Amino acid sequence: MTRRMDGDGDGRGGAPSAGPGHDAVAVPASVTSLLPGLSEIEPGDLRAWMIEAGQPAYRAAQVADGLWGEKAASLADVRTLPATLGDRLEATFRFDTLLATDVRDADDGRTERALHLLGDGASIESVLMHYPARGERRERNTLCISSQAGCAVGCPFCATGELGFGRDLEVAEIVDQVRAATRRLAARGRRLTNVVFMGMGEPFLNIDRVLAAAAILTDPARIGLGARHLTLSTSGVVPGIRRLTRMAPQYTLAVSLHAARDPLRDVLVPLNRRWPVAQVVAAASEYQAATGRRVSYEYVMIEGVNDTPADLAALADLLRGRRAHVNLIPMNDVAHTPWRATPAERVEAFAVGLQSAGVGTTVRRNRGREVGAACGQLAAERAGEPPAGAVARRRALLVEESARALRGERSAAPRGIERP
Ligand code: SAH
Ligand code: SF4
Image: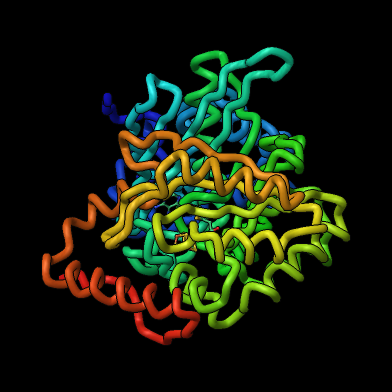
């Protein structure tokens, strides 16, 4: 594993610097870190700002070139702008809302995990995965991004869930994860092909900003990603799925299922107590019907918990006859659980069982295992190891809850882990 500090977000978007001939005024970072990110300002609003500032409207296009052009790391790099205008922009907006980015390579350089520091000290993660061209298949570069700092849903196997909820990300904080990755890719002559909202957070609990970011990412004049190359993943926020269905975009919808039976899903995806699995799948099927897009179902496999013959039968019954695809993911050992990943041969057998029930299934190999595949791991490391007593209590509770769930009983126990 290698580590390096990535220069491209390194605080330069933060503090306004006085241009030549100006008195340097130190603006506290706490003020500058709250300025809106330029990447979330609509092109028309930026033009209006320029006109208000007595500037020709074409200056907005020059800023846009710098923002979306993959080369500039700060406004100072946008050479077409007069320095005084650069200063005024920097006193009003942030060119980059990611103050610093710590990049770690794994998987022989094919996976890059980035820990981003935000203006208020929160940290989030994004993961860039490179899939070389194979046969007919073109090379893919997929970025997994975060929608929130932390997550309130609290799935017990997830490092982000264990951290609890921090805050929603701003539109620019979502988009700037993508800008940072496109700059790193461009430096190697590569292009971003896919974006998945599978990092930290529950996208549909920050849906206004996630949809605004998605619109920017798929705008040909900005990031220009094909709508089908953008995946929104949800743990089952039914009103969010319904809202997306009314919009009927071509985005890919991924549903994190992890269990087909309510008592077990209550434990593995606590949101299930609010929106039970049948409602989630019904809403996802409506999205499929409205858009013609096949829904993918994510299923993290946990030995002896959700990989039993009864789970296979329940999952097959739930999805049979729907245009759905299941991704089986062996659990990554990142959170403080009493559980282990389902062994590979059992995952394969589960896949074969689903396929023979007519449910399309793929086994997803975990990427970046050596640095902890599921997002939230780096931020969890940063939060520090929780006290041993809290870990032991959590494990005992999960053993008890999952045993109850396997007997078909529903539980209403609290979750999360106490950190001092
Ligand atoms: N909150 C959304 C999106 C972010 S989580 C959601 O849950 O869908 C994205 C994915 O990370 C989830 O589908 C889950 O499958 C995966 N994940 C979380 N913890 C994991 C772990 N320990 N091992 C493997 N995958 C994990
Ligand atoms: Fe939140 Fe998704 Fe992790 Fe569950 S799996 S805690 S919904 S980020």
